[in-house]
Image (spheres, rainbow, N blue to C red):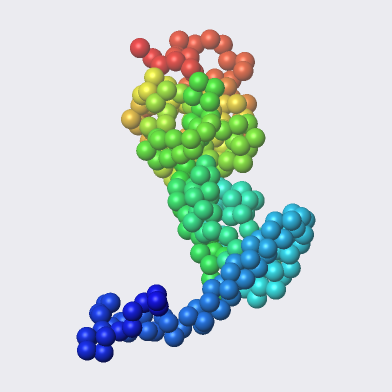
Amino acid sequence: MPPFPPPDPHQPPPVYGDRPSRVSLFWLRRKNTMRRLVVFLVLILVLIGGGWIALGMVSDRSMSSLRTKLEAMDPLQIKHIVIRGRQLTDESDILSRLDTQKNHSLFGFSVEQARLRIDALPFVDHSTVERHLPDTVIVTLTERVPVAIWQTRRHFILINRAGDRVSERDLTAQDSTAFHKLPLVVGQGANVAAASIIDLLAHYPDVKSRILALIRIGERRWNLLMRNGTLVLLPEGAENAALARLTDYQQQIRLLERPVTSIDLRLADRMVIHTPSSPPSSSPSPGTDAP
């Protein structure tokens, strides 16, 4: 007996499902092609994996040498580094924070990271770092410009016109020599009042050039300590007139070049001069105010 009865020619054939879709027919026709593609992709992945393994086995020295050769082949190399707006910031500090140098790739460093590092320098308010094709990097600084060095409680602090600290760190003795052109102001409140007396002294260059320090007395008036050791006592609120008198005396008798201990200009109708051999007088002493 056969395993399956022969179909009845008088009965319709059974239905096992709908017609195959176009997608099914497409994949049936492409079956062999897809098998080849899958094999090809597997081979590619194997080769890539082997390449990474081989690359990981290369020594750091070989990688460094390869990097150097690639950089040498780069047609866009840095030939010029231009720094603008620098007055107080040392050029070597800027170059070290830039983290690149001449003959390196123009695109081999991050300008944003370089800018952040440069902005962290003591006297830099903000900066920009730009690439200019074909071979130039331009760094532009905006610095916090100080007007004086304020000595307070044995600390030396750079200050601006408002009397605020310019740098977050105190100056060392080595730093202060780099800013010898800035006036030194001393005493409590000297930082706030410094800008006005500095502006005034600009009109009296013969006096200004001889000043070692501006000393604030009682937060009310100024003493001028000259480079030769002479102490000039200025009146409160009448500094302009006193400096004009002092300039006249300097031009007429070279007063600031004489061996004088102190020059008291606090009284409008007279001037008291103390020399090393002067006897004690009833006038106020150079370091104090009259009652």
